[in-house]
Length: 472
Image (cartoon, rainbow, N blue to C red; front, side):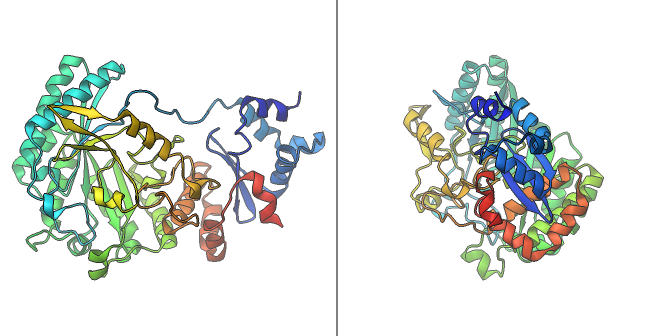
């Protein structure tokens, strides 16, 4: 029996999930499900295509690809695990309020009609009770609670009650409590002390130095947000709470990403810097803030990575935040339960009107009679939804980026052609690979060739099965 037959018998999807990526005069052979990344030449790819796709046996040629074939055969990595049965929540999300003291030009998280609505203590406690019980049933070790907004610390009493109660119930269930809050940091010293004393990780939205921060993220009272946000960041960085800095990158700030990275690293020593693209809307356009050019973003992202390396700080983008294959890179499809102040339970923290406009229903239950009532049917539907992304079918990012946001990027009926998010993600994927195999010179040449860069970013299929089409 040949190696080819053995590989196919072991996993039918091996060949379908094998990708070939042209990089200058080289090629990357990539298998995310087998954790294989190999830099090679056109001759080796041709041999591989003939052997695996055309089924042409040639022992002399086969020696050129034996290393890759052996790696495919020996790797035990498989498809990512699929949740099944009763909910297995990624985490419990609580939205204490949709209100916010910020007035960011690009933000559409706040709902004016729900601004004064605040989650009741009873609701927060009931949600935590359910989550702790579920984690114990599933033999998990951690009780993980994330706080979203609006601005969650705009309702600090709700956060405080939830944290202290969760610590108590976690002790009863022998679970490790873990708390993460996403915030703008525009809070009092008293609230800051609570955060540094009781919260494990803070995701702080800070877009950059003073001129960028104040332009993109003004406060609701028209005051500047830079000084209070920096004061909060310094306090967290000097505590035992992990600091993750999230910067929204616009056309105004994209060329300054390396500068922002250096300032972040020197000043705050964060664990992670997360650079995300601005999503253009009416508010941002009125303020002259647009989406950054995807190619410029990718180039500046690489410069930022190189700077952060010197400080041992991780720089990431949500499209390549995971090392492991996954069906979804966002909470949707991961059984995530996010409770709103009104008692709705959703898998997404965006406002419902955002996903309803896409024809999506991301609700999974409601808080009723002092408890969580989850629809198993809706949970199953979302597990299935995240596997249906026609745009991603032939893209090498399929298992890592996993389609990005299911509301903004790969919603049902979304265009099959790549948008700017996809093009940028594909280039970031190459940057990630070339850094891992330590080929900075080849990467610099690739990024410097604009024609090749654009052609690659829009290539419809990266599959080895379609390689001959690119060569014809």
